[in-house]
Length: 366
Image (cartoon, rainbow, N blue to C red; front, top):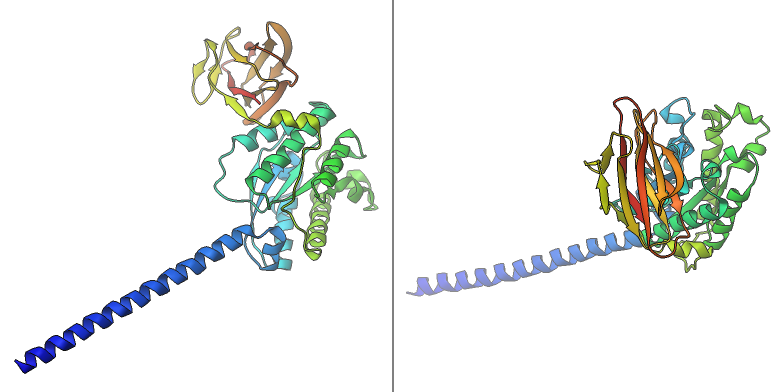
């Protein structure tokens, strides 16, 4: 009986100790989880420059046109972004992962549309905006200012701590109304821009020696892009720049872009088939959208064996858009930005390449 009591006592002691140890382990695990959670939260609050200082991984977004893509370089390694990533990693010991949005032929309109349409799965620390070359021939400076500022505001909403580095493209050759927009917005939002007009002019080399086709830089020209952007980054790094700022809208027209509406449900469809958009392959097939908003943008596909469509607002012809291209890419064309009241926007096929088609993705309004 005595032995039974001793064994029972020992068993009870062991059980109590095991429970105590288990409780201590649970507390320790919870503390470790708390520490990890705090670390994750702290890291997400760090801005681009603090992450460089702490040698953290960087997520970068590239918003822009074919120059943003590095078109004109001899190979992929000589594109400005890849030169920049390599140099930053060497200097700051931080790895930069880059994601492009938009591409060749991009204007501020398309960039704004696709930025708002994108479903991002990560938080970006820095974004490079490389726009303006194509805008000169597609939209007015007043419209460019509206969409460029709309892009900045959208990026700040995605991450208030994001660093935005605008690029004044070398292809401007000289300062103009479009570069002035970039300078004005940079000053207003405390952004330091990379001035490639100045960089090329101060290089001491003829412009054509730094450009492949007098628009796109060549590999030598893109070295100036990378070095100029590196200097912007380094200057901001040394000054411990703050990126979470209070801001207000600079251009009044930008207030029109507070909302983003992607309408892929036309009120009338005559002949288009539905397949991730609307595909038409016969002249006179048409789509009609009703809108009460002031901004109207047609979002469509440019592709080989495309065609043309005409745009009418309340039966008044606005413009004809060519969708034929050597490669497939989504595109956005501004139709109106001062509409008032109720309006009907009709898209009507006017020409089709043999065995081709027109693909409309939808109507974007504000």
